[in-house]
Length: 159
Image 1 (cartoon, rainbow, N blue to C red):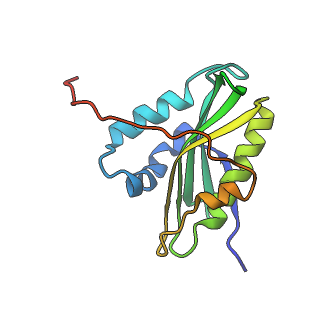
Image 2 (cartoon, rainbow, N blue to C red):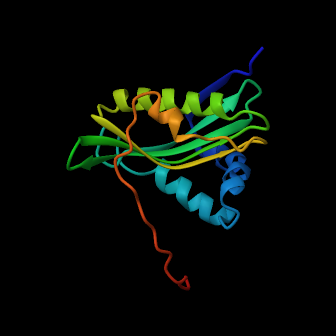
Image 3 (tube, rainbow, N blue to C red):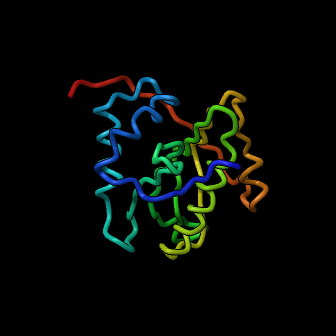
């Protein structure tokens, strides 16, 4: 029988439990940096507002976290109210596809609940023994490649 997954909002109490998953895609992200990111997403914007945000975790029946997704509501010129989904992470020893499918279903439900007109997804990270992640998983359910993003890392500054 295939393993079952459920997607729900990450709570402040489970932020540290999700940290090892974050490190699978970004070893340079310290626990302090992860807490800062999680705090910003879990405390930004009031319900229903532009700027509302959160983190979704995907867990198995035993409560182990296998997937993460940061989201926020923003206003885009082309689409209006848009669910911005960032840092989609899925980890499984054999097949990450069911985790990604669970995340995609949750993104659709969030967009409807938050009255968004579109969903934008950036930062796809999947790790399994097969190292399988395909933008095709999104293309197959109606997503289209719309934009390409660039990032330039700035020199670190002292805090």
